[in-house]
Length: 224
Image (tube, rainbow, N blue to C red; front, side, top):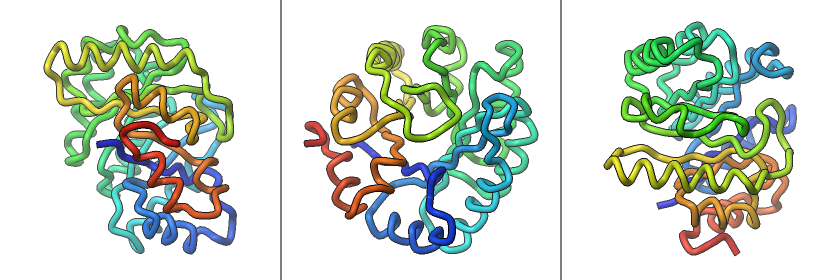
């Protein structure tokens, strides 16, 4: 089953509450929280996303899907872990080595949260194979992390396919999430390649009917 995680990065200021409730009514599966520190990526959304995530916990029962684009992963896990997110995803590139990655994985699990490992477009997905068995999700970035509204990098579809082959071959229970430039046209190839969670922000938030575009994105046999 394909699920949709709506990025709230570019929600219009002053319309947060009505947007969050409309997304829930539109049957998004998760709220995708893009946490940036101004160091790992240029943009800094840390305080804003912490406020948004805290607010969502008060008004909605939908799960939080946290994506850390930060250097200090340990602090971020503690800051957001108290909100009981469904999943906390950190970047493999933010780890000094595999031991550091394992430490983050163990820390996330202490909050009873699922563990996600994200990779930038330049990172080979094979680099995370040694730690993938300890995770619940791999996040394939289909744009450079750091800002919304970018163009989908179609060559990343191969990375999704490679992940799917490895996960199936090793009988792992790991979701494949894609993030970046996802819309009704780009959703089809990544779903066909094996992705089962789609992160979409601009495509949903600019739509007239949230429910309709979310329904189309979830279609197993393509989006159109």
